[in-house]
Length: 430
Image 1 (tube, rainbow, N blue to C red):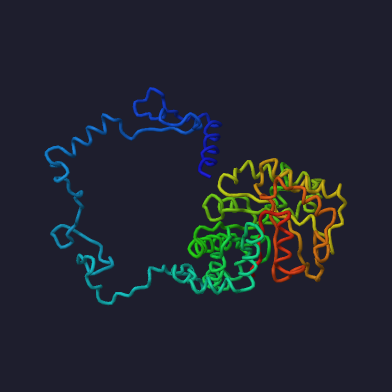
Image 2 (image 1 turned 180 degrees about the vertical axis):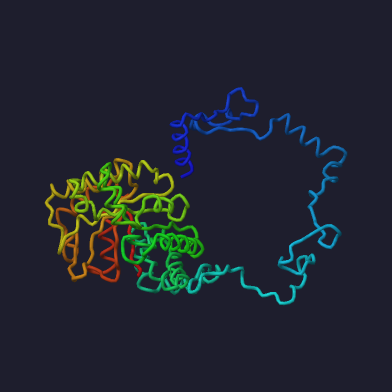
Protein backbone atom coordinates (compact mmCIF):
# COMPACT_ATOMS: atom_id res chain seq x y z
CA UNK A 1 0.00 0.00 0.00
CA UNK A 2 2.84 2.39 0.84
CA UNK A 3 4.54 1.71 -2.49
CA UNK A 4 1.30 2.45 -4.34
CA UNK A 5 1.03 5.75 -2.45
CA UNK A 6 4.63 6.54 -3.38
CA UNK A 7 3.94 5.89 -7.06
CA UNK A 8 0.90 8.18 -6.99
CA UNK A 9 2.82 10.94 -5.26
CA UNK A 10 5.77 10.53 -7.64
CA UNK A 11 3.53 10.76 -10.70
CA UNK A 12 1.90 13.91 -9.33
CA UNK A 13 5.26 15.55 -8.70
CA UNK A 14 6.36 14.72 -12.24
CA UNK A 15 3.26 16.34 -13.69
CA UNK A 16 3.97 19.46 -11.66
CA UNK A 17 7.56 19.57 -12.86
CA UNK A 18 8.99 18.89 -9.42
CA UNK A 19 12.01 16.63 -9.50
CA UNK A 20 12.44 13.82 -6.98
CA UNK A 21 16.07 13.78 -5.84
CA UNK A 22 17.95 10.52 -6.41
CA UNK A 23 20.83 9.37 -4.28
CA UNK A 24 24.11 9.83 -6.14
CA UNK A 25 26.44 6.87 -6.45
CA UNK A 26 29.21 9.22 -5.27
CA UNK A 27 27.34 10.10 -2.09
CA UNK A 28 29.60 9.02 0.82
CA UNK A 29 26.49 8.08 2.82
CA UNK A 30 25.12 5.79 0.11
CA UNK A 31 24.99 2.08 0.95
CA UNK A 32 23.01 1.07 -2.12
CA UNK A 33 25.86 -1.20 -3.20
CA UNK A 34 24.95 -3.50 -0.28
CA UNK A 35 21.56 -4.30 -1.80
CA UNK A 36 21.11 -7.45 -3.88
CA UNK A 37 21.32 -7.22 -7.67
CA UNK A 38 17.58 -7.84 -8.14
CA UNK A 39 16.54 -4.97 -5.84
CA UNK A 40 14.13 -2.57 -7.64
CA UNK A 41 15.67 0.72 -8.74
CA UNK A 42 13.41 2.81 -6.51
CA UNK A 43 14.80 1.14 -3.34
CA UNK A 44 17.85 2.95 -1.97
CA UNK A 45 20.10 2.60 1.06
CA UNK A 46 21.44 5.64 2.91
CA UNK A 47 23.58 5.62 6.05
CA UNK A 48 22.51 8.03 8.79
CA UNK A 49 26.24 8.44 9.48
CA UNK A 50 29.34 7.38 7.55
CA UNK A 51 31.82 5.02 9.18
CA UNK A 52 34.07 7.96 10.06
CA UNK A 53 31.16 9.92 11.55
CA UNK A 54 30.01 6.92 13.56
CA UNK A 55 33.55 6.46 14.90
CA UNK A 56 33.77 10.13 15.96
CA UNK A 57 30.37 9.93 17.67
CA UNK A 58 31.37 6.82 19.62
CA UNK A 59 34.69 8.36 20.68
CA UNK A 60 32.99 11.56 21.85
CA UNK A 61 30.58 9.76 24.18
CA UNK A 62 33.06 7.13 25.32
CA UNK A 63 36.05 9.37 26.01
CA UNK A 64 37.38 9.66 29.56
CA UNK A 65 35.30 6.75 30.82
CA UNK A 66 32.09 8.25 29.41
CA UNK A 67 32.58 11.67 31.01
CA UNK A 68 30.45 13.45 28.39
CA UNK A 69 27.66 10.94 28.86
CA UNK A 70 27.74 11.34 32.65
CA UNK A 71 27.54 15.11 32.39
CA UNK A 72 24.46 15.12 30.21
CA UNK A 73 21.24 16.22 31.91
CA UNK A 74 17.69 16.77 30.72
CA UNK A 75 16.95 20.09 29.10
CA UNK A 76 15.93 22.72 31.61
CA UNK A 77 12.19 23.29 31.73
CA UNK A 78 10.85 26.80 32.08
CA UNK A 79 8.85 27.10 35.30
CA UNK A 80 6.92 30.21 36.26
CA UNK A 81 6.38 30.90 39.94
CA UNK A 82 2.94 32.51 40.10
CA UNK A 83 3.65 33.77 43.62
CA UNK A 84 6.82 35.65 42.66
CA UNK A 85 6.62 39.41 42.41
CA UNK A 86 5.91 40.65 38.90
CA UNK A 87 4.49 37.33 37.64
CA UNK A 88 0.85 37.08 36.59
CA UNK A 89 -0.97 33.77 36.02
CA UNK A 90 -4.57 33.07 34.88
CA UNK A 91 -6.90 32.50 37.77
CA UNK A 92 -9.16 29.88 36.16
CA UNK A 93 -6.64 27.05 35.71
CA UNK A 94 -7.58 23.55 36.86
CA UNK A 95 -5.78 21.92 39.79
CA UNK A 96 -4.66 23.14 43.18
CA UNK A 97 -1.50 24.89 42.01
CA UNK A 98 0.83 22.41 43.72
CA UNK A 99 3.25 19.95 42.12
CA UNK A 100 2.23 16.28 42.35
CA UNK A 101 4.18 13.12 41.60
CA UNK A 102 3.22 9.57 40.69
CA UNK A 103 1.64 7.77 43.61
CA UNK A 104 0.51 10.93 45.38
CA UNK A 105 -3.12 10.99 46.54
CA UNK A 106 -5.63 12.65 44.22
CA UNK A 107 -6.77 16.19 45.04
CA UNK A 108 -9.94 16.61 47.08
CA UNK A 109 -13.08 16.29 44.97
CA UNK A 110 -11.31 14.49 42.07
CA UNK A 111 -13.64 12.24 40.07
CA UNK A 112 -12.32 9.66 37.57
CA UNK A 113 -14.58 9.84 34.49
CA UNK A 114 -12.42 7.46 32.48
CA UNK A 115 -11.20 10.24 30.25
CA UNK A 116 -14.48 10.27 28.32
CA UNK A 117 -15.09 13.61 26.62
CA UNK A 118 -18.39 15.42 26.93
CA UNK A 119 -20.95 14.42 24.28
CA UNK A 120 -23.96 16.05 22.78
CA UNK A 121 -27.15 15.20 24.69
CA UNK A 122 -28.51 11.82 23.66
CA UNK A 123 -25.36 10.70 21.82
CA UNK A 124 -22.54 8.33 22.67
CA UNK A 125 -19.38 9.92 21.26
CA UNK A 126 -16.84 7.83 23.14
CA UNK A 127 -16.81 4.34 24.57
CA UNK A 128 -14.22 2.75 26.80
CA UNK A 129 -12.27 -0.04 25.05
CA UNK A 130 -13.37 -2.64 27.59
CA UNK A 131 -16.98 -2.04 26.57
CA UNK A 132 -16.12 -3.03 22.99
CA UNK A 133 -13.83 -6.02 23.38
CA UNK A 134 -15.43 -9.45 23.47
CA UNK A 135 -14.31 -11.78 26.24
CA UNK A 136 -13.11 -15.34 25.66
CA UNK A 137 -16.52 -16.49 26.83
CA UNK A 138 -18.24 -14.17 24.33
CA UNK A 139 -16.11 -15.52 21.48
CA UNK A 140 -16.80 -19.11 22.49
CA UNK A 141 -20.52 -18.40 22.67
CA UNK A 142 -20.51 -16.68 19.26
CA UNK A 143 -19.01 -19.79 17.71
CA UNK A 144 -22.10 -21.78 18.76
CA UNK A 145 -24.62 -19.39 17.19
CA UNK A 146 -26.04 -20.08 13.71
CA UNK A 147 -23.94 -17.20 12.37
CA UNK A 148 -20.79 -18.58 14.02
CA UNK A 149 -21.42 -22.04 12.64
CA UNK A 150 -21.98 -20.59 9.17
CA UNK A 151 -18.66 -18.75 9.40
CA UNK A 152 -16.97 -22.02 10.27
CA UNK A 153 -18.59 -23.85 7.35
CA UNK A 154 -17.60 -21.06 4.96
CA UNK A 155 -13.98 -21.26 6.08
CA UNK A 156 -14.04 -25.05 5.77
CA UNK A 157 -15.23 -24.64 2.17
CA UNK A 158 -12.05 -22.72 1.36
CA UNK A 159 -13.76 -19.34 1.09
CA UNK A 160 -12.21 -16.13 2.36
CA UNK A 161 -14.87 -14.90 4.76
CA UNK A 162 -16.20 -11.41 5.41
CA UNK A 163 -18.88 -10.60 7.96
CA UNK A 164 -21.67 -8.67 6.25
CA UNK A 165 -23.66 -6.57 8.70
CA UNK A 166 -25.18 -3.08 8.78
CA UNK A 167 -24.53 -1.06 11.93
CA UNK A 168 -26.29 2.13 10.82
CA UNK A 169 -29.48 1.47 12.78
CA UNK A 170 -27.50 0.45 15.87
CA UNK A 171 -25.52 3.68 15.66
CA UNK A 172 -28.63 5.82 15.31
CA UNK A 173 -30.28 4.02 18.23
CA UNK A 174 -27.26 4.68 20.48
CA UNK A 175 -26.44 0.96 20.70
CA UNK A 176 -23.21 0.93 18.72
CA UNK A 177 -21.02 -0.44 21.52
CA UNK A 178 -23.29 -3.43 22.10
CA UNK A 179 -23.52 -4.21 18.38
CA UNK A 180 -19.79 -3.79 17.78
CA UNK A 181 -18.95 -6.11 20.67
CA UNK A 182 -21.20 -8.82 19.20
CA UNK A 183 -19.64 -8.38 15.75
CA UNK A 184 -16.18 -8.51 17.31
CA UNK A 185 -16.97 -11.88 18.89
CA UNK A 186 -17.94 -13.24 15.48
CA UNK A 187 -14.93 -11.64 13.79
CA UNK A 188 -12.65 -13.50 16.21
CA UNK A 189 -13.72 -16.83 14.67
CA UNK A 190 -11.09 -18.58 12.50
CA UNK A 191 -11.02 -17.58 8.85
CA UNK A 192 -12.69 -14.17 9.12
CA UNK A 193 -10.82 -11.59 7.02
CA UNK A 194 -12.93 -8.51 7.58
CA UNK A 195 -16.22 -6.79 8.37
CA UNK A 196 -18.54 -4.91 6.04
CA UNK A 197 -20.40 -2.56 8.38
CA UNK A 198 -22.59 -0.52 6.00
CA UNK A 199 -24.64 -1.21 2.87
CA UNK A 200 -25.98 1.46 0.48
CA UNK A 201 -24.22 4.04 2.64
CA UNK A 202 -25.74 7.44 1.89
CA UNK A 203 -28.18 6.03 -0.67
CA UNK A 204 -30.86 4.61 1.62
CA UNK A 205 -32.96 6.74 3.96
CA UNK A 206 -31.00 6.07 7.16
CA UNK A 207 -29.09 9.37 7.16
CA UNK A 208 -30.39 12.83 6.36
CA UNK A 209 -27.16 14.86 6.44
CA UNK A 210 -23.62 14.37 5.25
CA UNK A 211 -22.35 15.23 8.72
CA UNK A 212 -24.30 12.28 10.12
CA UNK A 213 -22.60 9.94 7.67
CA UNK A 214 -19.16 11.30 8.51
CA UNK A 215 -19.77 10.82 12.21
CA UNK A 216 -21.17 7.32 11.75
CA UNK A 217 -18.21 6.16 9.68
CA UNK A 218 -15.64 7.73 12.01
CA UNK A 219 -17.15 6.35 15.23
CA UNK A 220 -18.00 2.91 13.84
CA UNK A 221 -14.61 2.47 12.22
CA UNK A 222 -12.82 3.49 15.42
CA UNK A 223 -14.93 1.12 17.52
CA UNK A 224 -14.40 -1.81 15.16
CA UNK A 225 -10.64 -1.23 15.13
CA UNK A 226 -10.73 -1.80 18.88
CA UNK A 227 -13.22 -4.67 18.89
CA UNK A 228 -11.70 -6.54 15.92
CA UNK A 229 -8.02 -5.59 15.63
CA UNK A 230 -6.37 -6.67 12.42
CA UNK A 231 -9.63 -7.16 10.51
CA UNK A 232 -10.30 -5.27 7.29
CA UNK A 233 -13.22 -2.84 7.31
CA UNK A 234 -15.48 -2.42 4.30
CA UNK A 235 -18.50 -0.43 3.19
CA UNK A 236 -20.87 -0.56 0.19
CA UNK A 237 -22.26 2.48 -1.59
CA UNK A 238 -22.86 4.15 -4.96
CA UNK A 239 -21.37 7.22 -6.64
CA UNK A 240 -23.97 8.23 -9.27
CA UNK A 241 -21.97 11.28 -10.36
CA UNK A 242 -19.20 9.05 -11.73
CA UNK A 243 -21.48 7.52 -14.38
CA UNK A 244 -22.02 10.90 -16.05
CA UNK A 245 -18.54 11.18 -17.48
CA UNK A 246 -18.15 14.64 -19.03
CA UNK A 247 -21.88 15.31 -19.40
CA UNK A 248 -22.40 18.48 -17.35
CA UNK A 249 -26.21 18.31 -17.36
CA UNK A 250 -26.02 14.79 -15.97
CA UNK A 251 -23.55 15.85 -13.28
CA UNK A 252 -25.77 18.71 -12.15
CA UNK A 253 -28.79 16.39 -11.87
CA UNK A 254 -26.90 13.62 -10.05
CA UNK A 255 -25.46 16.10 -7.56
CA UNK A 256 -28.94 17.45 -6.88
CA UNK A 257 -30.59 14.03 -6.69
CA UNK A 258 -27.95 12.33 -4.52
CA UNK A 259 -26.47 15.07 -2.31
CA UNK A 260 -25.13 12.60 0.27
CA UNK A 261 -23.08 10.65 -2.29
CA UNK A 262 -20.43 13.29 -2.89
CA UNK A 263 -17.28 11.60 -4.29
CA UNK A 264 -14.97 13.82 -2.26
CA UNK A 265 -16.69 12.85 0.98
CA UNK A 266 -16.60 9.14 0.12
CA UNK A 267 -12.97 9.40 -0.94
CA UNK A 268 -12.11 10.95 2.43
CA UNK A 269 -13.18 7.73 4.17
CA UNK A 270 -10.37 6.02 2.26
CA UNK A 271 -7.66 8.64 2.68
CA UNK A 272 -8.34 8.82 6.41
CA UNK A 273 -7.95 5.05 6.71
CA UNK A 274 -11.48 4.56 8.02
CA UNK A 275 -12.36 2.02 5.30
CA UNK A 276 -10.05 -0.62 3.83
CA UNK A 277 -12.41 -1.74 1.07
CA UNK A 278 -15.06 0.21 -0.82
CA UNK A 279 -17.66 -1.60 -2.94
CA UNK A 280 -19.34 0.42 -5.68
CA UNK A 281 -22.74 -0.89 -6.72
CA UNK A 282 -23.71 -1.15 -10.39
CA UNK A 283 -27.45 -1.07 -9.77
CA UNK A 284 -28.03 2.34 -11.37
CA UNK A 285 -25.89 1.86 -14.46
CA UNK A 286 -28.58 0.45 -16.74
CA UNK A 287 -31.33 3.01 -16.09
CA UNK A 288 -30.21 6.18 -14.30
CA UNK A 289 -28.45 7.79 -17.27
CA UNK A 290 -30.93 7.11 -20.08
CA UNK A 291 -31.99 10.77 -20.21
CA UNK A 292 -28.54 11.68 -21.50
CA UNK A 293 -28.30 8.63 -23.79
CA UNK A 294 -25.63 7.05 -21.62
CA UNK A 295 -26.06 3.26 -21.61
CA UNK A 296 -24.82 0.82 -18.95
CA UNK A 297 -21.54 0.12 -20.74
CA UNK A 298 -20.65 3.79 -21.08
CA UNK A 299 -21.77 4.61 -17.53
CA UNK A 300 -19.60 1.82 -16.16
CA UNK A 301 -16.64 2.98 -18.23
CA UNK A 302 -17.16 6.54 -16.96
CA UNK A 303 -17.31 5.30 -13.37
CA UNK A 304 -14.06 3.37 -13.48
CA UNK A 305 -12.22 6.18 -15.28
CA UNK A 306 -13.16 8.45 -12.38
CA UNK A 307 -12.08 5.89 -9.79
CA UNK A 308 -8.67 5.55 -11.44
CA UNK A 309 -8.32 9.31 -11.83
CA UNK A 310 -8.87 9.82 -8.11
CA UNK A 311 -6.36 7.06 -7.28
CA UNK A 312 -8.72 5.55 -4.73
CA UNK A 313 -6.97 2.22 -5.10
CA UNK A 314 -3.84 3.83 -3.64
CA UNK A 315 -5.62 4.03 -0.27
CA UNK A 316 -8.01 1.05 -0.22
CA UNK A 317 -9.21 -1.94 -2.18
CA UNK A 318 -11.97 -1.08 -4.64
CA UNK A 319 -14.67 -3.66 -5.45
CA UNK A 320 -17.40 -3.73 -8.06
CA UNK A 321 -20.76 -5.11 -6.90
CA UNK A 322 -23.52 -6.39 -9.17
CA UNK A 323 -26.72 -8.42 -9.14
CA UNK A 324 -27.05 -8.43 -12.94
CA UNK A 325 -26.85 -12.24 -13.22
CA UNK A 326 -29.85 -12.92 -10.98
CA UNK A 327 -33.45 -13.18 -12.16
CA UNK A 328 -36.77 -14.28 -10.62
CA UNK A 329 -36.52 -18.03 -10.11
CA UNK A 330 -33.11 -18.38 -11.78
CA UNK A 331 -30.92 -16.84 -14.46
CA UNK A 332 -32.44 -17.19 -17.93
CA UNK A 333 -29.33 -16.14 -19.85
CA UNK A 334 -28.00 -18.30 -22.64
CA UNK A 335 -24.31 -19.21 -22.68
CA UNK A 336 -23.60 -16.43 -25.18
CA UNK A 337 -25.55 -13.84 -23.17
CA UNK A 338 -23.91 -14.92 -19.93
CA UNK A 339 -20.46 -14.71 -21.49
CA UNK A 340 -21.15 -11.20 -22.78
CA UNK A 341 -22.48 -10.06 -19.40
CA UNK A 342 -19.49 -11.48 -17.55
CA UNK A 343 -17.15 -9.76 -19.99
CA UNK A 344 -18.82 -6.40 -19.39
CA UNK A 345 -19.41 -6.61 -15.63
CA UNK A 346 -16.51 -8.78 -14.43
CA UNK A 347 -13.68 -8.86 -16.95
CA UNK A 348 -13.79 -5.17 -17.87
CA UNK A 349 -13.41 -3.69 -14.34
CA UNK A 350 -10.63 -6.18 -13.55
CA UNK A 351 -8.75 -5.76 -16.83
CA UNK A 352 -8.95 -1.98 -16.64
CA UNK A 353 -7.30 -2.14 -13.22
CA UNK A 354 -10.26 -0.27 -11.79
CA UNK A 355 -11.58 -2.87 -9.35
CA UNK A 356 -9.49 -5.46 -7.53
CA UNK A 357 -12.48 -7.70 -6.79
CA UNK A 358 -16.01 -8.20 -8.10
CA UNK A 359 -18.94 -9.20 -5.87
CA UNK A 360 -21.77 -10.95 -7.71
CA UNK A 361 -25.05 -11.56 -5.95
CA UNK A 362 -26.31 -15.10 -6.48
CA UNK A 363 -29.52 -15.07 -4.44
CA UNK A 364 -31.75 -12.36 -2.95
CA UNK A 365 -35.41 -11.83 -2.13
CA UNK A 366 -37.37 -8.73 -3.11
CA UNK A 367 -40.02 -7.06 -0.86
CA UNK A 368 -42.76 -9.06 -2.60
CA UNK A 369 -41.16 -12.34 -1.57
CA UNK A 370 -39.85 -13.24 -5.03
CA UNK A 371 -36.54 -15.08 -4.87
CA UNK A 372 -34.01 -13.97 -7.46
CA UNK A 373 -31.23 -16.44 -8.20
CA UNK A 374 -28.38 -17.31 -10.52
CA UNK A 375 -28.71 -21.05 -9.97
CA UNK A 376 -32.07 -22.74 -10.17
CA UNK A 377 -34.02 -24.14 -7.22
CA UNK A 378 -32.07 -26.49 -5.00
CA UNK A 379 -28.84 -25.33 -6.67
CA UNK A 380 -29.77 -26.60 -10.13
CA UNK A 381 -27.03 -25.61 -12.58
CA UNK A 382 -27.61 -23.63 -15.76
CA UNK A 383 -25.74 -21.88 -18.58
CA UNK A 384 -24.90 -18.83 -16.46
CA UNK A 385 -23.33 -20.92 -13.73
CA UNK A 386 -21.35 -22.89 -16.28
CA UNK A 387 -19.89 -19.68 -17.66
CA UNK A 388 -19.04 -18.51 -14.15
CA UNK A 389 -17.30 -21.80 -13.53
CA UNK A 390 -14.96 -21.07 -16.43
CA UNK A 391 -13.49 -18.02 -14.65
CA UNK A 392 -11.12 -20.12 -12.58
CA UNK A 393 -8.17 -17.80 -13.24
CA UNK A 394 -9.89 -14.92 -11.42
CA UNK A 395 -11.66 -17.02 -8.79
CA UNK A 396 -9.79 -15.39 -5.85
CA UNK A 397 -11.11 -12.01 -7.05
CA UNK A 398 -14.74 -13.14 -7.21
CA UNK A 399 -17.02 -12.81 -4.19
CA UNK A 400 -20.69 -13.32 -3.42
CA UNK A 401 -23.13 -12.57 -0.61
CA UNK A 402 -24.76 -15.37 1.37
CA UNK A 403 -27.43 -15.25 4.08
CA UNK A 404 -27.45 -18.45 6.20
CA UNK A 405 -30.91 -17.48 7.51
CA UNK A 406 -32.42 -18.31 4.09
CA UNK A 407 -30.56 -21.35 2.74
CA UNK A 408 -31.37 -22.86 -0.63
CA UNK A 409 -30.60 -26.42 0.55
CA UNK A 410 -28.62 -26.08 3.78
CA UNK A 411 -25.73 -23.85 4.78
CA UNK A 412 -22.96 -26.41 4.29
CA UNK A 413 -24.24 -27.56 0.89
CA UNK A 414 -24.88 -24.02 -0.33
CA UNK A 415 -21.41 -22.81 0.63
CA UNK A 416 -19.74 -25.81 -0.98
CA UNK A 417 -21.54 -24.97 -4.21
CA UNK A 418 -20.56 -21.30 -4.04
CA UNK A 419 -16.94 -22.28 -3.44
CA UNK A 420 -16.87 -23.89 -6.89
CA UNK A 421 -16.92 -20.42 -8.45
CA UNK A 422 -16.11 -17.84 -5.79
CA UNK A 423 -13.01 -17.27 -3.70
CA UNK A 424 -14.67 -14.99 -1.13
CA UNK A 425 -18.04 -14.68 0.57
CA UNK A 426 -19.80 -11.90 2.50
CA UNK A 427 -21.77 -13.80 5.11
CA UNK A 428 -24.80 -11.92 6.41
CA UNK A 429 -24.97 -11.98 10.20
CA UNK A 430 -27.77 -9.49 10.90
